[in-house]
Picture 1 (cartoon, rainbow, N blue to C red):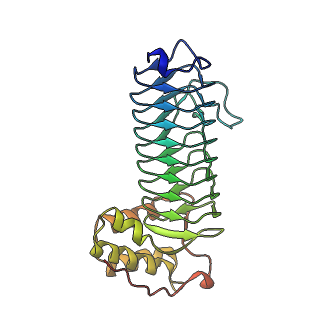
Picture 2 (picture 1 turned 90 degrees about the horizontal axis):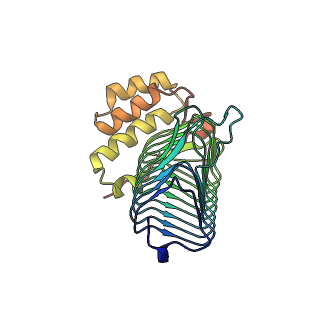
Picture 3 (picture 1 turned 30 degrees about the horizontal axis):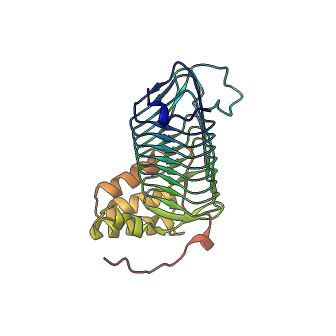
Length: 275
């Protein structure tokens, strides 16, 4: 357990909690059943945590709620939990619900930032380095890929997938999957281009970015349906790990992928992606 000076006297801590010695716990915090707090974790005032494992170095801001019961009418009190990775930051009033279904897990990876009022529903998976801006909301069983950025007040239907290194504009809403490496916006969030800035920041070389850009422009072209576009990509686009992932993501989609809705959605964007 931490030393007394690191735990505020008003904090309420269940006897089942496992807490590293250097954890800091602020005023009026409630640490409920089945909680594990790793080294260097900091919990702000009035936060509530139960049925959760929090990785080392993670910060929980005031009034955040971690591990509360899922908002699922099918949940009957079965034992589930939340796992949050290392060096995350969960901001004020954000909620991360525990899973629904015996033994289920809601999982947040390492180095994720979940901003104020954002909501992560039951059984969701956020891979490493995901950013959810203020009030972004993801429904149950949503999967968010590595390095994705979800804009403020954007909304995602249950079972949706957001591809890795995608960026979605604020106030967008989708019932379909979001293409990896894409920059999307709207209701539904149609693909506007590649996430060139995000890809450069993560070290994706220009040749790979150019191949992704070519593949996405084929997918956006109103002359082709998705099957035709994939065939054209197979013939005309130089393959690399990113293009392969892009194609596989589309082929494995169960809800369909948000790419274009009609000819008006096709934008002839010839902007250069420079080093």
